[in-house]
Image: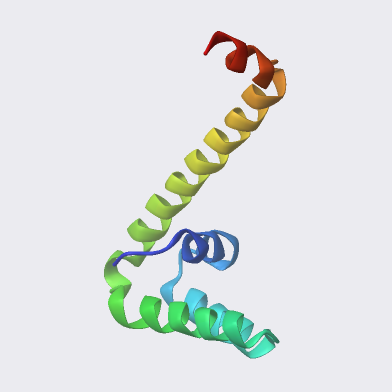
Length: 97
């Protein structure tokens, strides 16, 4: 099963190790969502998790997703810190060329 980054972020925020509880949560979130585009995306994700992920290996899938997203957030934070400490000037590059 392939997931977009938005779907991974939703599962990271609202998923849990229980397949049944995750699908139920996603369906409740779909019912509470007001925006039609977001509602369509949430329902699509709920259906995808319900049909394409087998309950027997969902817990392994969930923990792998958590590790992947934790690493993504760590790298994003590191990049933000690196950008804040890097002092470069655009004019310097223009003069060199």
